[in-house]
Image (spheres, rainbow, N blue to C red):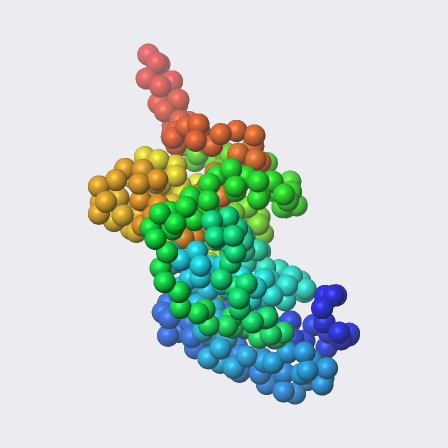
Length: 361
């Protein structure tokens, strides 16, 4: 049971269950459909709250209205894909509270697996701001209200000089900082069985098996991990990308199958490295999209991740060093020394057969 809910029995998890229900977003094809799903789930949760919540719960939590709930998760998605470290640090207290809600009950675990990894970016953004400024703008904000999901409005502030912004980005993107952060906690428990199980699949697809640790960064090695916008599984495939690399989404969702999801991820990495000829660029494209990375390279006449990092979302700027740091720590290697994709095992097998046939009289 959570240590911050002063209630017990089936009502002890009611407020958590309501919030988790609102998190349970199914795959939608447009923002309009996504909002409709959020609205339906919100209304269901509100009905349950009005009918079942005891007085002590009503005193503890103010149920968010439709607009507040949708706006919060839309703002999280928007901030994750923007370039403001200040905004990332600003929403950290509310995101941390949401993570506590989700971790308090098993039905929230798939969403907690997604959010816990994204919390690392909020933590690092705050760390970088404090390293440069000695403080965080959120220090001047009023205390977070219990039960409220929306952060207070961030007060307007003049944009810092470019050199100061560059220092913040450099701290947040420093791989050594990421290695120190990741090194404070052990690998996810599921990695003990999934890593040796999935490495051969990566090898069969010609991908260095060490990249299987991408699943820690994407999902905490939880095969059922889900994001609020529909990314699912160990490697967090959206429906379109999943189908593109051979996974079914309906009627059975192959993204929930660790082996099939790993094979699709290996094939996607193989494709991305083939396009960009660089592991850091392949990782950036895995996170931000190959189109966005390709356009940045073309627009800025660049050929490396470092040359375009400033023009990518803040999350992507940190995602690449986070993945590199994770592989370095978990495998004890320098991931930058990993070779490019090799030939697939099935192709090598066919080549051997062909060679043997040609040797026959």
